[in-house]
Length: 286
Image (spheres, rainbow, N blue to C red):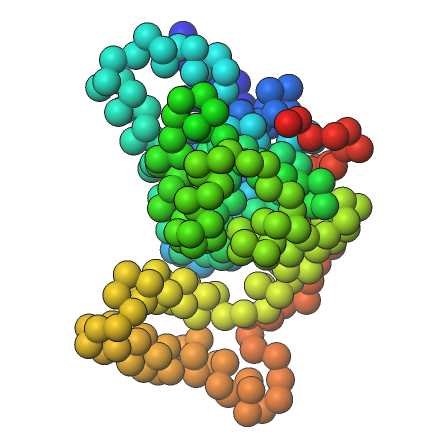
């Protein structure tokens, strides 16, 4: 019998903002194979709409007091009996989720209201912008239970650098939000009661930009990161800016700047209809 339980929901508002929300607060939004599958399906849907320009921004969040506790305990118990091939299959699905989030064409925001442990640190690192509550805490906790932050390591190491990755991946220390901001994992830390307003402000900032230019810039930065100092990269950067200049959206952007008027993609902000992602006053789990 197919399990139809909703573990992650996707809602897209009238502005083209996609809200992907983990809905397992009773287990601190921990991952299992079912949740990973649902997230992958939602990311595929968002990717298609982002490529068409109908989704402009993705916000990744969760219900309850924790952002995500990482791997679900019951899932881990089942994995004890898995053979190597079964573990590889599961790991590849997790890897597909991280890569899918990391490579979405549209800008992405992680809304982190509480504890983000294990693989959840990877989710945050895969987002373009991380806004976190003062109650947020992060931990690469895998070595405590004889594992490794293997699948998420490329994304977290990119975010905080190899030197800091060595420390926190080997010690499994809990990282408070101020330290996470200093490391570069978090872009903005705010009071808990200001989290949603700060996310809203960032959404408005992103929606003021050219949809086409945002997609092109995100793809460009990924290409530059792979080979920052090469003739091919330099040629690619010249081609990107040249193609944008002659595109309809690029022409509109330049014309609006010269005419001192808003570009066509900047619409009045309607009344927001934002899915509930409440922050509780309970302390996050250690």
